[in-house]
Structures are given as structure tokens and as C-alpha cells.
Image (spheres, helix red, strand yellow):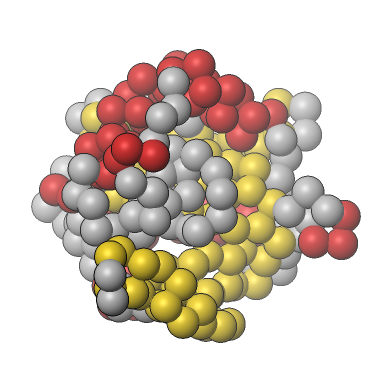
Amino acid sequence: MPTTSTTTSSYFGVRRLGSPEPVEGPALCLSRTANVATVQNKPFTLKTGERGIIRSATEADAAALLVYARENLREGTGSVTTLEEFTLSIEDERKFLTEHAEKPGWLALLAEVNGKVVGFTGFRNNPRKRLAHNGMLGISVAREFRGRGVGEALLSALLEWARANPLIDKVSLAVFADNAPAIALYRKLGFKEEGRRVREIKFGEGQYKDDLLMAVWVK
């Protein structure tokens, strides 16, 4: 499922995010199965007044998430993954979602409005013991829903989950250095810049973008 980082995975790739908007809704509802916490139907209000929910993605969402991912990748400019490179099957996506549901340091969240997927964020902590307190997130928002508060709602839910998760101390991300709306939102939520990878992404001959590394401590 493509979203915001250069880390190799099915969701890390798309780097688009709308301008920050206020988020409304009750406190996060976490449901625990064994040692795994999932997010259960957290409502939020868009700037336009529409209502949406944030919840953990499940295996049953595989088909809808593949459609969503391909729609985002067709834009071509907001991702480190091209549409041609995105070759996941529905079985691959189901496996991906099952892994995120089963591993206590992983999370996959989607945003829905009127039953349609309009945003996605995912997080994986590092598998090595001395790095397991830290992980990378990725995020994407459907073009027509950017600037309405979907990105902030997704990130707020993810950070609340991370604060409640005893495994996670730090949440990291990477973002195109020229993506001012996304960077402003990350800063609003407490992320700070930790580094810059110069000319990290190449879109064509002589067309490069820097990668900005940001993180927030949740403990």
C-alpha cells in the first residue's frame, strides 16, 4: 500500500498530503487481541462538515486498498513508486494487512468517508532489538480529500496508538523537502527535522528532490 517513505514495503511510496485542518472526534478506541492493539472506528469531521472514520485496515479491505493505491499512483509526481512498479496482487495485499494486524509494533490504518477509502497510513517498528523502539510511517490521502483534515486525523490516531504501545518510543518519517503542507502538518503534530538526504529522489534527467527526515518522540 503506497504512502510516505522511501523504506521498501508495499505501502511506503506516495508522499502527498493536504494542508493541516482541525480534527474533531472522541478519544481513540483501542481493542486488544492478545498483545496486539487495533483502532476501532474513530470518527472525525472534515473541514467540509462530512463525517468519516479512522480504523485498522483488515484483510477484507485488500481489494479497496489496491484500487485506492493505483488511483494515487496514477498522479506520477507524489511517489517514489511508479504505477508500473506497483504489481501487488490481492493475495499480496491480504498478506500485508494480516502481518500488520498480527505484529504488535505494526499498524495499518485507513480513513473512510461514506464507505470509500480516502486515506491510508502504516507504521512498522524495526525488527532489531536495539532499534525496535523506533519505526517508520507512511501516509497518503486521496487527491480530492487533501486539505480537509484527513491526514491529520490519520496521523493523530497513529500517534495516539504509538503513545499507548509499550514497544514504541519514536515515530519517524521521510517527506519530499518541497512538500510544504505536509511538513507544516508534521511540525504541528510535534515532528522535528533530523536530517536531509540531498537529491535522494530522481524523477528524470536533472530532476531531483531532497528527502527530509523527521521524527517525534512519543514517550
